[in-house]
Image (cartoon, rainbow, N blue to C red):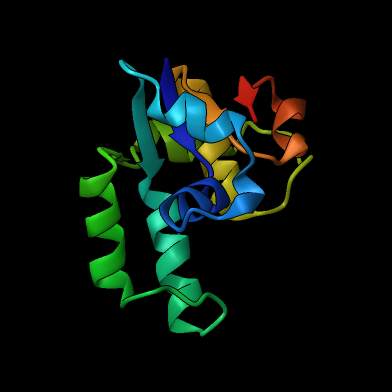
Length: 128
């Protein structure tokens, strides 16, 4: 299964946060699963960290690359097709980072790992 982690999913998984529940980690750690995080999520994490709205166990420039490596998570690039697909999305969700993740999932046929039920309104495959 090709999984795209929502920003909160990545952070909770990396920090072993109990809010993640049991099913999401099982899917992420499943042998053969291709797991990715959007570069948009990395951007979101960087912004929130710089604004002190997000506390990480180490500086963001160390934390994110380390977690990608340790957990074998791919950074999914943002392509022009993803950005353009955002324009076609209805406005069920106003978060620009989530809208880009939704567009990437639709264009690339990825399953999003997120607790955010608003993703369902877009026809995205979502697991939690």
